[in-house]
Length: 282
Image (cartoon, rainbow, N blue to C red; front, side):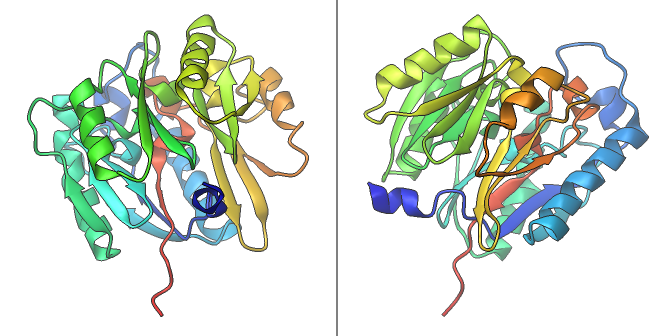
């Protein structure tokens, strides 16, 4: 199992997508907060710049599609592990066409493409937590049991367990990986219950880092050459108490990234990129 963990967090490429102007008024949301489209664009540009310039990833930038207001949230369109990409079937019907551009981009990167053709299946990538050892799949308003079964078929090397998501949009609305064997989790009762279920279902022991705000628990961990452990996380302006908790991770390069606008339409940091570790062609 140690061999499976050795490459955890290693990434070479990121697929992102532009912010459509339609996001502000037409993106799906669970609240009615007003989105500032220019600020959302600036935030997204800064996020992409961190991936490209600060972290040195090859960024594949897909154009925005005004007919797909949620298309910037590329994570929901595909789950990539190793050299296999599962093109999902998003739970919201209005988002199903987002997968086409993602499939083309991942084909260009020479990944093995698998597609979710079963019309009874739904799966959003935001419900998929890969720990490096196994997958946890949130059963939510957007992801069902059949979707989880198809994911298990696609990634046969790993155990797949399902976790009920009773509050929040996705499993990763309140948790993510903060490093090898480290789950970052929100402090709400539903988040803590979900963590307990994950711990009970797993054969592995995970450390946990609890942050006061559920939304702040969504962060991006990478392990990169010449940089070591890297964590993109919430800013002190958004979540001051949670930002302080991340400072305990003394071995990590900590990069606060603002997400104040996209969070208004339920977008989190992991939502805006699909990360890929492409082996060099020898």
